[in-house]
Length: 149
Image (cartoon, one colour):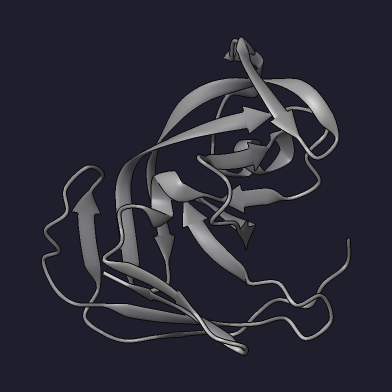
């Protein structure tokens, strides 16, 4: 799947929160532009120590990483236990549960994010609700998605 990356516009100051905490230290807004070639919202995010390109997916209950993207984030995939049954568009599969130290999209950083690694059957990593659900709001328009923290 070849898609041009979306433009990310961010405001200052930088907000950081520990996952499960709904009280932001400061207001931050990130705007993601809709990709005109596929109509989806994409973002480049800092995950632990690496950079991962995500499809923003409000229908995904958890952040889901491909095995290659998990490695970019510093996850030792050979040590994982793939014991979480999941259902993807490609059918039934198994995944490994992990906790990511942090995910940063623009100026918004969430710490201790529950996620999973899907070794096969997932073409792109998904920025799901274990990240998005920590935000004050996620709003979509015909041309942009706004993340508020």
